[in-house]
Length: 167
View 1 (tube, helix red, strand yellow):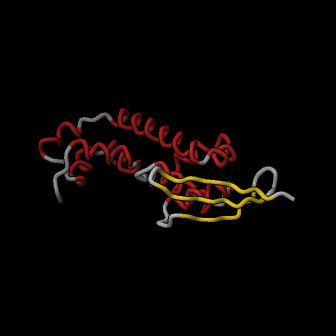
View 2 (view 1 turned 180 degrees about the vertical axis):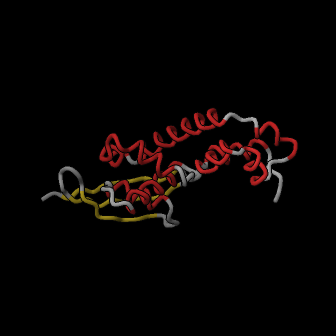
View 3 (view 1 turned 90 degrees about the vertical axis):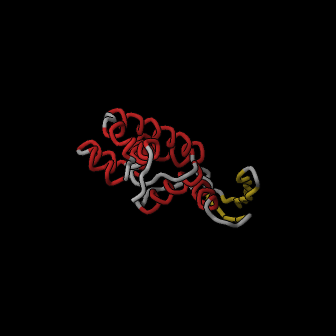
């Protein structure tokens, strides 16, 4: 196993709830399992588990805010359960971007049978695809109408248009 530095080991603690739980019980064993370098071993094992957990919660709240910005209707639909559900999802998932996080959370909710806003779910799915454009028919809530969702990838992200059909 390769030696890792303090910052890398700390990052792994902050992003893995199960690892934090093991660290709070036996920091030395976790340090050895991670391969923390001899130079950083003492400092790493002296980290206060309560401080690590507090910092992890700050990062999780920041992730939830970013996901909520990308899927506001779904988060609103989940209501007061949204933070609890996101924290449960985030225990085992730490994507590299807010869009991937929204996609991962959307998929996690879908698998568990939660209602999602189709438009946001399709946008999250599109974010992980390689194609440059996607078309989807989506139901609009609460009106119940139908719209054609057009998603186009470009250098600054994803653009979205809705063409609403009325009858």
